[in-house]
Image (cartoon, rainbow, N blue to C red):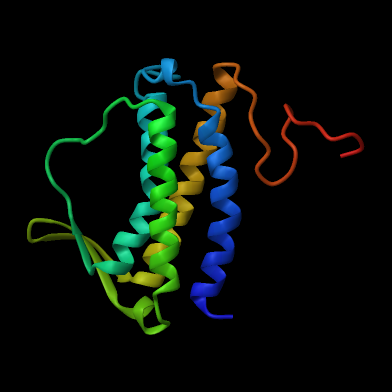
Length: 165
């Protein structure tokens, strides 16, 4: 199995459960935070919606140069789901179009001429996926704290019990 084949299998499974989490986010609670130092629910949801797009950008480019101001805003959940679906589609297309050699190319995160991080694309794509799973898990905690039923990710959740499980 090639790396692209393995990534596509994982992407299909994980983005399905990620979408179920995003669908539960109540737009009207976007500014809610569990703690003053925490990200707001709306910004965390926006971040998770963007993250699949990072995979496409990584596989299409050799670097990302960070800009200045934070691009976060408060969007309705429906808008974020559309963005998420587009980013998943773009990630899938980029993975499908990548050869094994494409994953050996070095990718860098920069700000101007300053390089913060460089690694082979194969490592960067894995990091993007792991980073997304981390923030998806945060979203499930946020949902629990605001009393929204949490969907199952790797089996039933406490809100979606299955008899005998």
